[in-house]
Image (cartoon, rainbow, N blue to C red; front, side, top):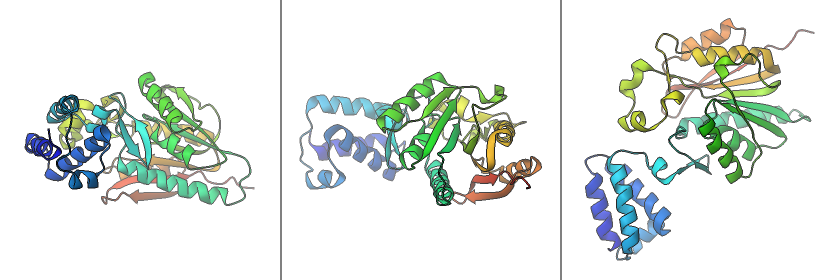
Length: 292
């Protein structure tokens, strides 16, 4: 089958399920993945012949896309902060908003280390999933020691593979943070993107996310939406070093509530930040310096 014929077939098959821009994106991703053709190649070589076996493989993927299965799960990988990451249905697919959080963390680390930081910075990621946060931090920093925690053994297997894939050292620990009374050590930076979507917000979640991504990593009870934030903040109070920083990715509807909770626990210099879509999405706070 010629490339232009398959592109027409592909587009028509998905036109009722996805917007054209997304269909085009799927097509170009698959052409690069299966045929090593860049976007420009597909334009310049419309008569390129796709062999029968590849057409069959592409049609199988097409069928999965028609069922609204995320293309990241179909291919078993995605990109985050310019780095390759393996994904499967035991892990959330990393989001662009989390890239913004990582960018913020990196800027703060650079500032800390610019103040003649000699000892390695100890960093902890809680609820690591694919490991996208700690692996990216490890890849883009020096003189840091990074640990990551998750309750899911299957997610940790993926996270460990991603550390190997990106050739960085990260210490992974299986642990239920809600049952944790003490963290492994003191840290300079603690970051978490925990479950924060309330059950009542399920109506806002796209069907393919609900059907495919792990609910354990997404949802919290309506009556206790700050469940993880409360617990992690309490642990951070005990085990952040002096002037240590706590970062959270948060529920866009609960920014004020999260800030108030942290203020009541004694955190200072709380900064609430919006993502590229204009939603309250992340925050930074610090422990007060000890009086001399």
